[in-house]
Image (cartoon, rainbow, N blue to C red):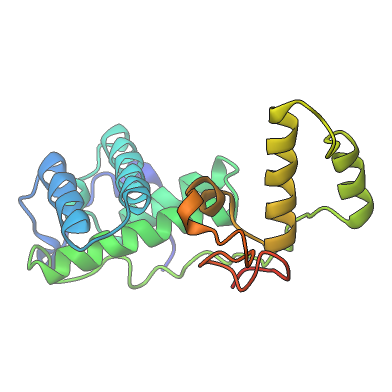
Length: 201
């Protein structure tokens, strides 16, 4: 089935199975509460709600139904608009996963009989090897952070760089590291096998 232009899709009436009286604010707030009640992390909730907000703006601008009552055609138009704006597949994928969870939740709550995302395949995201520092580059960085410096900021930054490089800790894990978390005698941290041998697992 070919996608219809936004002008014609805007005039579509939701199918009977998608009939829904939830307004956008109620739907978003209820979904947000459900995420928090299920123990989802704040960042996950923020990402999901942001995706819903972007969809809502698009639907309003196009004169389409509320987010809880859209059809597959409306969502196809939305994803198509994202690609036309030049967004990467990886970015579209984040929105796709958020909306997928939202419509699954609507069905589970009995607010819809169908899930309009079922017939929309997820974006293909190519695996990318992230750029990383090699030994020569690390030596250049460390030359700017001499171990014999009397500047405590330089010593702190050197410790941060070496910890990240030697252990594979993520930036968020390092930021959350407390003094009592690390065993300085054994050079161990709960997230890592060893601060000597790395990387973290």
